[in-house]
Image (cartoon, rainbow, N blue to C red; front, side, top):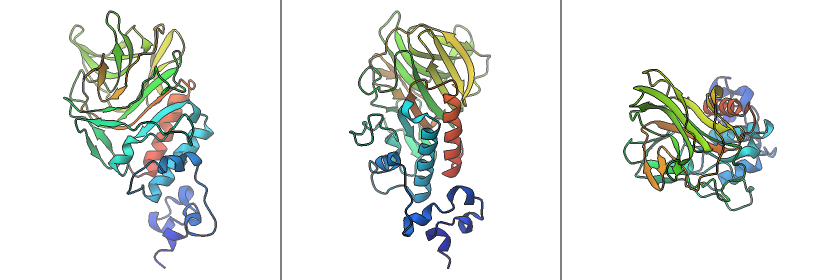
Length: 308
């Protein structure tokens, strides 16, 4: 009976017992009269995907991730959550979150610009010169359900290296002197300072920054920039607070947010060459929100057999 483990819901034979705690009994319902109930949000996302559909292991991991987001209270704060480390490239373009409800029209998919490369269970990699992802999310329109003027956050999970010292992982700005920004920059080079620095803005025109040394490290992990309130922004890495910055909110920029580049008044530049496993846009859920997102995604990565 070599297939007993696969069709009776016991993964012990496949995983030598390592996955028993997570998967035991889950698949049994899929192949017997005892039904396993996926989250409605999981199936709503699944129905948006083209063929071939995700494997059962991957689908169960997504279902568990959504359960964790819901049980910790994070889910209602998410406007978009893209997993780029998928099994199929077409699936990486579809957000797992529809903040307008699972029965509403699904958000527009991400549009790949200038052919960024993609690798299974790893994500997108930019070429540092022209490729990027257009989110088709404008925070000043009805795209934003949870994202607000005084409560907003951008996040990206980077797992590669960055060759362009001026690269911007996510965001953009409109206007000049001063511009109104929504962006997140991992360490970039300042010719004037002769050093690297973090830069981020969430609905303001005051460049929040943190000067580092002559080292660019680190450029991997989950980076997120958050507007906590009307006068303060914060920068996180792997859910841990790096620093806060005093910057009064002004308005929400009217622009389409790119990933792996910056939208400079409609012109895309500062292209990234890093590898992106995930990205999200949300409101500032809580002080613990960034850490919860990081921990939940880490669990998802391990269950899906890729490592970040």
